[in-house]
Image (cartoon, rainbow, N blue to C red):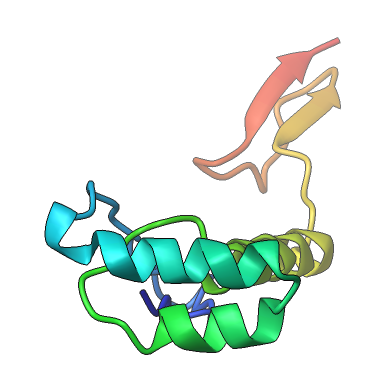
Length: 105
């Protein structure tokens, strides 16, 4: 299973990643992958599983995709300009707009 690890946020909504049960016909692939992991051959296991089609699971590419989406969202939120929609005053401000809330003191 190959997940697109690139995040397009905030310019585009990232594609959803769907999971489903693996077919019993693919059991030998999952067993081979698990055996490689058990032997500590993580890179080989990752390369092996990424070459397969119609295999679903929580593999390295899935976690990389999630991590990249979190970092992209964090970066966006940290650089987003903050504004306070509340205006506190005794008289209604002349420059108030629809996205602001006037709170009379």
